[in-house]
Length: 205
Length: 205
DNA sequence: ACCTGAACACCGTTCAAGT
DNA sequence: ACCTGAACACCGTTCAAGT
Image (cartoon, rainbow over all chains, first blue to last red; front, side, top):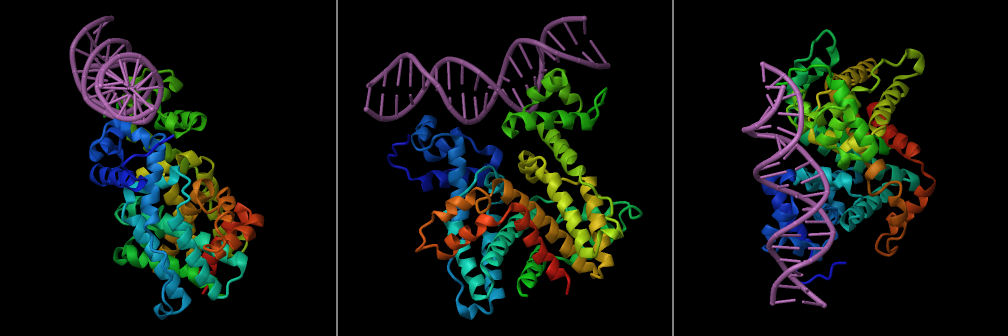
């Protein structure tokens, strides 16, 4: 229905993302985005069917920014290259954690993510994984990356949550309290790469 | 601030969950929950500070339902027992996928999840993992389970997304299109357990 | 003192009234 | 034909008016 005029979808999404970065996800509204763009609220509907479509544009903008350049062979063995790719995805999503809930309400079919997946599959292919192994590995890597970013930014068991866990009754939660103590020195980065290493170990056989 | 009267937090949460299950997350409103309970809208504020607190109660209700009973030793080796526990978490979250976005906006400190984590750590302990290995493993399992459920229910690369991937230009996405073909016969269950097996393999060394 | 309905300040979206 | 502001039907929450 939109008969665009002077604004590109990317400009719309960038304006919405600016609103989100400034005022958080609750601050996102059609009116706020219109003000950000200096147009009337209703003018937004020239470009977008409804609010959901605007949200989808934001998701595309954020996820589409992931770097899918194939890591050079000089980056090391395939494990190192997959790690580099997964790190890029983590950084991409982690750059705008407030957008995370939107990725869940919009079945994104981001070309950027597709290209990233293509690159990952290529490395896994070189690593000698079979066809089905590659799919399972790719999806597991993506599931882990997304879940880990979520936990890191809003989860119960990581980061700030650790302190709360340490205060659980030790009689009922002996392992949890002990784990919380051990986690004091565990940075989010080491935690993320530790879990990723488990996945990569599993792929190596 | 609430000076509860006749309703328990669980009853509030159950009413809100009923609304969500019937009308979806967008259908959740203070007014709708009040109607569900047969009380005035403002009476809700006797039990709850604001809408966010009500949402948190829903998250607690859903996640708290996870079965944390230690799997009997007869359930098999530790891998099988961890798998059983992770499956339970997957089933718990998967039972109300519409609630998933709420788990992201509310740092849940669910006792149920804590108990589940305690049980998982116990099995990992018996499996011979060291203290830090156990934390990393637990968090990786949780990240994977959450991310996988999300992908399964709303993600881009799984389920219905596969068809769209198969239609990508094969020249630019040779691996993706091939993977989509191979994924035709890959059920969500096998996919989930395939990825989980990768993690477990990594823990086994 | 307690409860609650009207009211307020928002929201997404419709639509008629302007050009 | 195009654009847009008022209006509508919601929303969460405040608060004064009722008991």
